[in-house]
Length: 325
Image (tube, rainbow, N blue to C red; front, side, top):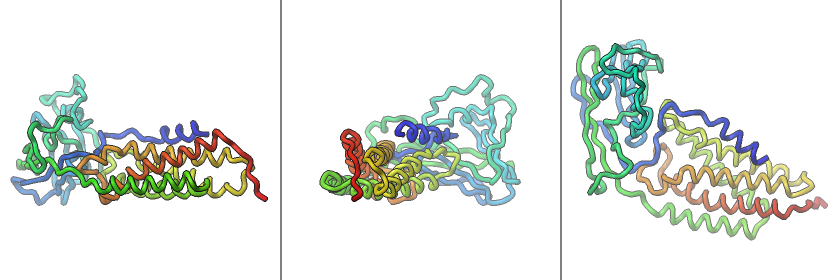
């Protein structure tokens, strides 16, 4: 049963079309636009991870790549095209540009356009907008500007330049983790001293909060940025498991299935919290949810989930018959 549940979760994880935005210590901003910006809206999303451009009217806009080649084209009809020969197309597959462009990627060759959207909007990694190293800039302090660059574009034949600056953020507040430790310890004590119903109820509560926050994170960024479906799938599995255990607790003859469902619920919440652990120490979380609530749910969820999973595992090690008299 446990192997089947895990396989279902992993099988439904869709491959991301781009390296998804993750927690970061940086924030990038549009600081100026030279030329006529009235035909489009442009913003940074995911802290510093992606640039998003949206057409305002019937204009044609071409985003230029790192060698001045046509990279993206937004047609007046709303169609968005990507040049398969642009080296930028391949370098932008992940945040740090670790992919080597194929041999046919050549900035000097005529573009080969592939349509990627039809709604006049697209978001992409642009390495001109973020720090390109996993190690923070030497000597940088919170609030410092760490880079400034320009994204060049051509709007109806006229040159437009979008200037971007990136800043190192202050570290996150520590009180959500401290509060989470108190909540988590109280939850573990309630599980240790309580019944299976207490473990089911705590698992369900944690799972519902995690599912809401996970779904919030997914819908907060454009689909093309590749948010992981596990952000909501793992807690959804925990919700289903906990609810099933609560429904079946008076109908089963042994504790085996109850404890198995409790274990699945706790393990799924623990996996969700562990997957998001970087949010606990990073300044920015790519989600519309309040960052403090996210950190509280992640830290407390990890502690409570371990208690729930341990309760299920111990029950499986000591199965018993259920007396319905």
